Structures are given as structure tokens and as C-alpha cells.
Image 1 (cartoon, rainbow, N blue to C red):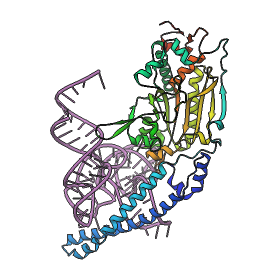
Image 2 (spheres, helix red, strand yellow; image 1 turned 135 degrees about the horizontal axis):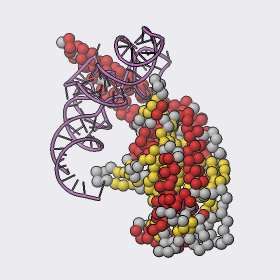
Image 3 (cartoon, rainbow, N blue to C red; image 1 turned 30 degrees about the horizontal axis):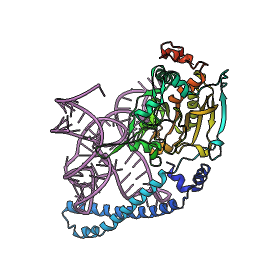
Image 4 (cartoon, rainbow, N blue to C red; image 1 turned 90 degrees about the horizontal axis):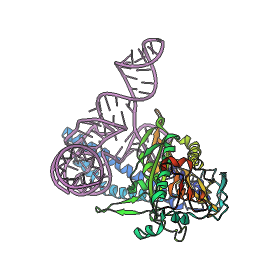
Length: 428
RNA sequence: GGAGGGGUGGCAGAGUGGUCGAAUGUACCUGACUCGAAAUCAGGCGUACUGCAAGGUACCGUGGGUUCGAAUCCCACCCCCUCCGCCA
């Protein structure tokens, strides 16, 4: 949610920011609604004030035992007009809320211009893509060769975009998650969270998945007529920890890390990445979330992105850091860095982490605020980033660490999590 | 699933139809005392919208209803706690 004051007082700033996203929005209807709202609200409040004073009079007259009939008659005439005004005001407020709820965040001034991913700007590259004296296999071939990735089983049990992992590959997947959690908790100062995988609509609204992107979510109906959603990322349950809270600014920053499966319906991505486990309905992710004082969020974005980079560096996986252009950023973000890992079989870099500063956008939707000593509450800032997507990291390890015979070296830092195992081989 | 209790300000906790946006305690802020601190004393201290301001309005789990007037009465729902049953 944008600052409503900004919408009112500087609509041209809002329009300019949205234009950078390629999301032109006509603010005319908003301004018309606002003008109406102001008028109806003032009218309503005047009527309410009148009713309140008259009602108080009745109370006082009764206490003194005097006649209340004349005042009763006067107040009786207010009822219908008041009710009509209150109803009208409620409708207007609901319309204004609905309008504001679907406006995306404004891009930060440092965000590159551009319409789509082709305009994203490479910030840095780390590591050298490995060279092979054989034709490198992709993770599908490698995984099936190791009897570790079973795509047919995933399809049989659940359907397309589901995968089953087995044996040492499943263990490697688990090792990656453990490793990432341990690094973030012991070296980067994050508190580990275990969170619900199903959340209510309020939580989805808070982080910006609702109301606009319901079709991307898996929805679970309940017998009582309500429904929950499967989380598309741990960002949702973890960030909503502070929904409706007023935190002491001195207690910030809060830094949380959480490992969960993520569920995405991937509507609208038919035919995209259908091979392998790049784009799944269910995948594991380690998510870092920071809740910070407003003046700290830009610094925090850099360090948080660095925390994700640390994982790639410890795994010795080559990557590049991209600054997403205005047109390619998600709904709630003010700025996003994507980390893209090198995949030899695709001969390209693929997204493995996304780190964003949302400034106060989510906080306003969530009513999450902080208060300085003796000061007024103000919206805090939220950030999050993948550190990392576990499934894609597994893909990257398989492809980058492969050997000519189809076996795969286990990265040094993971061997302790693998019982000392150094090589994944095709033995059953 | 069954029975009972309860949701009020940062926290605790009064308040069962009328100067209640809400006692009191605590936390917090300011001042006095003090070399300083503690203790003590005095004052202040919810959120949001609206207005230049004075002020006005809304909010006591949520949504409806009754009433001139609702934290207080009625209905529905949500959540929490205790006990019983079932259960990883």
C-alpha cells in the first residue's frame, strides 16, 4: 500500500513512478472518489456530532427529571439522514481501499529503467564457470542417472511440475537446507523460525499476494466456508509476524530465517521450464526476512543480499548479481536484486535468489509500526531474500560439480552434512 | 467433537444503558529533590481521519441488530484459556 497522503498530495509523483513500471494508472477516479469521500465524511461527522450532543442532553435532562420529549423529537429527525450518510461513506471508503490495494510499490530512484528482464542490469559477477572436457549433462540426466531424481514418479503421484527425490540426492537436498540455515543463524545473526505452511487471507494481503495475485496461489477450502492458502514463500508467514504490532525502534532490526516448502500454481507459465525441477509447484526455500527501522532499509538490502551471496560463495557456485529494472520487479518491491547461478547445461545464469526492499509498502498493509522513545508510531520497513532456493541450488550443484562418468562431487562444505560422503555415484 | 470461562489502552486490570475514549496499577516521557542514581513527589502519556486552530468523528475481538444514546443489551462468527474425548 502506498502512503495515502502521497496519493492525495502528489499524484504526479505516483503516476511517474508507476509509469516507470510500465503500469500506467489513471488517478482521475481516485481523485473523484477522494473529493466525494471528504464531503460525505464531513457531513456524516457533523450529523454524528449533533446526535451525540443531543443524546447527551437527554441523559442530563433525565437525570434532573425534566421533560425530554422536545429533544427526542429533534434527534429523531436525524436518524435517516445519518444512516444514509454512514452507508454512503462506508461504500466510498471500501472503494478507495480497493483502489489503493492494487497499486504496486514505486521503484526506488536507483532502480534501472526498463520494461522487462532484458533491461536488468548486471551489478557483479563472481566465480568462473567451470570448463569440462566433455559435454556437460543437465540435472535431469544427471539426477536420473544417480537414481536420485524421479520425474515420472512425481507426475504419477501428483502431476506435472512435481518431482520425487531419492537416496543420496534427497539427502544432498536436505544437507543444502541445513547448511544454509546454519550459516545464516551462526554467521549472519538470524533467528530460525518454523512457520505455518497455510495462512489466512489477511496474511496474504499483508505481504501483497492478495488481492491481485490469487491465481498464483493454491487455495484450501475448509468445511466452515472459510479458506486458507498454501504459502508461496516463507516471506508471508514470517513477515506477518509483525502485522498489527507497534515495535520499539530500539528492538530493531529483527532478522529471521525460515526453511519451508513453497507452493505456486505457476498459472500463466505453461510451456516454460517444463523440463527438470527449475519450475515446480512445490519447492523448498530458505528465506531471510528483516524488519528494520525506516532509515536502515537500504543498507539492510545490501547486507541481506550479501548473506545470500555468501551461500553461493561457500558452495563455490559461479553467479552474477542483477539489479532488476522497474518493469521486471514484483508488485510490492521498491528495489530487487536477483542472484543468478551458472547452469552449465543451459550455458547461462538462472535465478536462484531474489532480495528486495519493500520500504513501508508491506508495513502499511500490515499496520506494522515502530515507535521511538516518546515518539509517534510510523510504519517500519520490511525486506526479504532467498538464501537460497534449495531445489535450484541442488540443480546448480549437480550440474557444476558433475564428472565425465555422470557422478557428482559433493561440495566441501556439505560433506559434514552427508556423513563424509565425497561423491554421489550411480550405485543403487 | 463435548462442557465451562474469557477477549477493554505497551502490559496488567476495573467498568453491565447516559458528561466512558474508558478507573487504577505498571511501563514510558517531562520536571522537582540528588554530586549522580535509586526511592519519593508533581504533571503528561492509545490509534486513525478531519480542521489553520479551537475542536469534531470513529475505534473496547469481528460483523449485524435494539435504542434518542451501546464497552455495557440481543444475534452470528472468530480467537484464546481450562477440563473431557480423539489423535502424530
